[in-house]
Image (tube, rainbow, N blue to C red; front, side, top):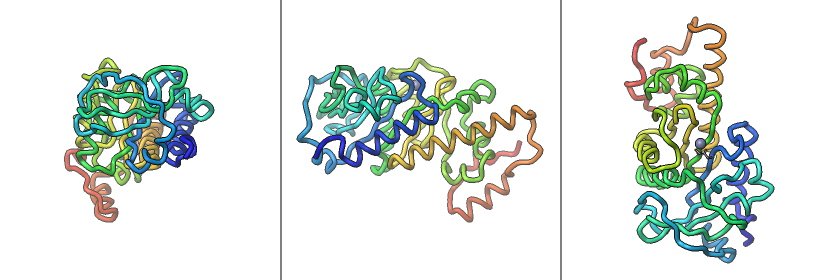
Length: 273
Ligand code: 2HA
Ligand code: ZN
């Protein structure tokens, strides 16, 4: 099968386009990765053109020998759907999970995303929680970023404020949202901080930068990012009208919702204000 005809490749490209259309990927902002299923690797293997091994910059032994579809470093989400072979690549990890090599794409040269350590460490954490997790998505979501300038950088505050902004939020991300204070992007340190949060959450905010989302497939992961960012937009609008809410979703409302929708909402988010 031709590489670009595979369903997982089409889904990946569509998600890049969707993120671009949301305005979350100015210039080369943001990155996406997908842990490819063995049967999907088999479908496209005939197209491989294998390059040299390179260091990952992190160690992910539980992902040894796995394949990932990832956006390219310095590449623009805007171009993914029209020039996929120049904008994204498929990589294979070595038997220790310390090196990668490009097996398809980036035909004019280049490397996988600068956030490869964060992506792979998040994949490792999520795959250990549940092997169904396959997608890690980083986007520069405008309203979430704006809120990191005015809200305390605490998981409890961001989770509760976002939950209050839309009834669906506690159902879509019942475990909550984690927050990382400002850090230098692109390296191992921010990857370690983010992957720690990903043990508990499917969403991690990088202060003054953006957000990471994890999910089983492209729909769920994009939907998660979209839901959290929309809640953030409502909060920005609300705070812009007046600093205090006249009414909101109460802790009792959340408890009732949790029963009917069969979700567990951690007590640490249901504090009295
Ligand atoms: O340019 O978003 O965090 C990609 C990024 C870095
Ligand atoms: Zn970024």
